[in-house]
Length: 602
Image (cartoon, rainbow, N blue to C red; front, side):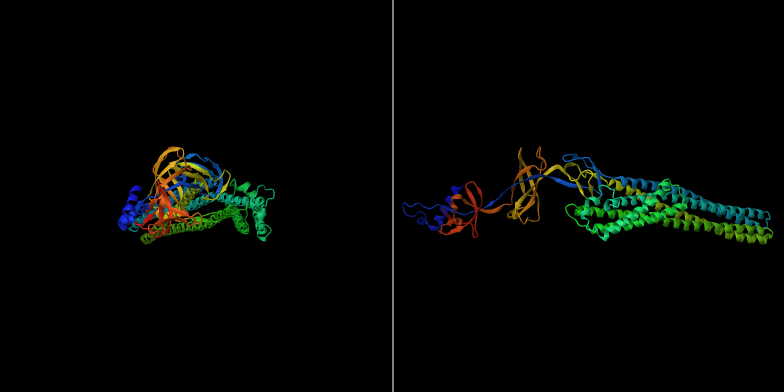
């Protein structure tokens, strides 16, 4: 190829300068020349890097807590859905059991009250049927049948009996409400005391109210609490002491009577008010502890992470205290104060229903008395009785409508409570499920980022997992090559110790350049898996860049001295140049005015 270029150069000289100039005088040596020619050149960029998995992620916790079990380690292969570890779930299990008991109680209460309400409606329907029969009998009596007066009295007496039965049914429903209501008192109080106990343990650890406590947060970080000798810390310790005394004073009654449930309804109310006051002291303690943590300073021992974890724990405990006092779902009140509020609502509802049933009984009794008084009045009395029984029929129909409406409203309320307890049960189950650390896909554990017994926050990574079904090569490219990069460029990959070349494609170009190294990252995705390849293995790549116009000249035309590299043109001018890649015995050159057709002089 060089001979052809030299001949082309000589021919160009002859054509441009004439034969005499090209040959010169007889015996002179004609200088060698080279004519610049542009050609399309596809540069190859050689890179090196490490194999990485195409799919890789961090497996994090869904909840905060202490790691109780880690079942896998680095290098282990796992499958999608596999449980990799678990957080301590004792409180979640207790919550699940409590929610399950509450849901079971709600179902029992629903079934019992529905049966009683159905019986009340049936009783009211019978009262309407009886009133209708009484009215028909009274109308017959008005036609002159004297014997019907006794029947009318009998029917009126049956109406009284029906009203008495309705009153008894309402009273049974009211009693069932109280039974169902007070059956939840123990679990409500137990849940509140579990929350109070958790806060007491945390405050003892943090504030060292109990000086005999070992390994407390206070022992570990007491030199770094910014509020160590401040009024803030003093207030918090005072609040913790008051809170601890309140719990200790209450614990004797709790252990002797409440755990066994050996309390009357009135005693449940008294003790529930006591627990409400303890939870109000708990709220004060939560606020004081948060102020202590907010006033604390950090360093290498008390890190921002530890301090933030302590704040998260006290905020979580504060939320649990608030829920133990009062929370609601679909209109159903939960918690100690919710229990007390629900008690007042039940009292109001029972009073109203019993009062309405008593009124119905009074009306039936009045009707009976009026029927007896009318037996001696003949047809006039019979006609009067018709009017009375018509009114009574209207009243019994109204009672039936009220009974049906009461059944519907009460059942809706019970269904909301049942739905709320089912939702709490599902939530408790979900919270327990969140204590499990699960693999999102099949792959290999490449890193274990936490240890058993470590306290972690929600969202904290525990494992790093990668899928080695396909590989990618990550490498850095000088910013001078940016213009020649584009997605889809082909590459060849070789790996030490593994024979052969493997095809790859440029699939990712980082959007920014590192200001220090002046390089940007790229990713080459392999089209196949090299046998025996592993994540992190060193690899080499040859990336075919976009083609570009280029000028190549024989190496001997490029000269250099102390001023750098240069070439000579046929007119004797010296041109400074820069050189690039080499191939065979040629070298790539460029300068500001490079153009095809320039003649170089050797």
